[in-house]
Amino acid sequence: MFHLIFATPVLYLLVRTLWPLGLPLPAKIGIAVLMLVASQYHLWSRLSSGSVFAPEFPRAVVILFNWALGTILLLAVLQILLDLGALVVAVVRWQGITMPDSLRYAAAGLAAILAAIGVANATRVPPLRDVEIAITGLPPEFDGYRVLQLTDLHISRLFPASWASATVARANASGADLIVVTGDFIDGSVAMRRTDVEPLRDLRAPDGIYAIPGNHEYFFSYDEWMRHLAGLGMRMLPNAHAVLMRDDARLVLAGVADLSAPQHGRPGPDLAAALAGAPPGVPVVLLDHQPRQARAAAARGVALQLSGHTHGGMVVGLDRLVAPANGGFVSGRYRVGDMTLYVSNGTALWPGFALRLGRPSELTRITLRSRP
Image: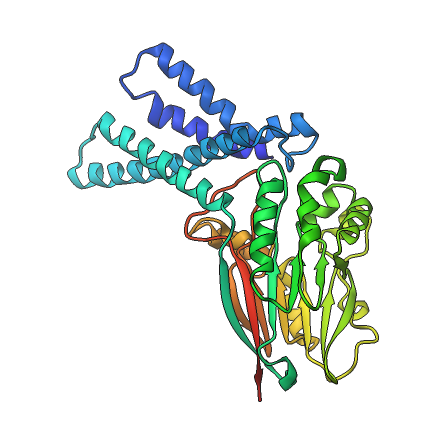
C-alpha cells in the first residue's frame, strides 16, 4: 500500500513537471530514477529490517529519505495548484497557455525548502507546551498539580539515544509532579532499540512514571517490550489504574490498551477493567493512546483524557484528512461532554514520514486546576 501511494505523485510529477522541462534526456532519466528510488523509501525500510516502521539506515540517510519524500509530496501539491491555475487562465482566455520552466523550477525549489524546514521541525528536541485544565471536583490538594505528557516518541534510527537523552533532560527539568507516556515508545525490536531507549531509565518525577502501550508496541513483540519498559522504571497501565495521593486526597490515573491490540491477539481497551476497584467519586485521568473513544470515556465519567497517535496531523491541512479516522480529534484541547480531551501533537513521530509544518512537536506540561 505504501509503495503504491508514494509512487503515484512521482508518476504525476514525471509527466507534468519533469518531462516538459528543457533538460537533456539523460538528465531527465537520472532525475526520474532518483525520484522513484526516494518514493520507495518504505520498501527499502522493509528490506532493511523486515518492517516499514523501522528503517535501519544511518540517521543521515533516514533524514535524507524523509527530505526527498517530503519534497516529492509537496511538489506534487504545488504542481497541482499550478495546473489548476493554468486551467482557469486557459478557460478565461479561451486559449491554451504554456507554463514556463521558471515556474516549475520555482515550485521545486520551494518544495525542497519547505521539506527541509519540515524535517528540521520534526527531528528537534520538542519544547515545553504549557496547558491548564480545570477538573470538576478536583481536590484542593491537587490544584496546581503538574502532569508532563510524552507521547509518540518513536525511538528509532531517526530518534536515537542522543535525542532521547536530550528529551529526558528537558522532561526532568520541567518540574512535573508526574510523568506519563501515552504510547508509541519505539519503532523496532528490543534487540534493535535497547541502547536507544536506555535514556528513558533516567526519567524522574516525584509521583513516578506511568505509561500505556501505543499501536507500534504491538508491531514489535509486545510482551518483550512491556517487560523491557517496566524494567526501565515505567509503571505500565494497560487496562489498569493507580491511585495518586496528596495527604488524604486522591486522584485516579487509569490507562487502557490500544485499539489495535485485538488485531495482534491481545486484549483490547477495557475501561471497565481499568477502573475496577477504583475509589468512587474520585476524578479520573485516563491515558488512551488513540483519541477516537473519547466520547465513550466521557460517558463513563472520566474527567480528563490524554491521548496522542495523530502527531497533530503533521502538516496544516493534512489534519483534516487525519480527523475522520480519529473521531474528529487531532490536535489540542477538546470539550467532550463533561470531560476534557487533550490530544498531543507528539514528542516525535514515525520515521517513515517525518515532516512537521504548522503542527510542532511538544512536551506537554499540564497543570490541573479545581473547578467548583
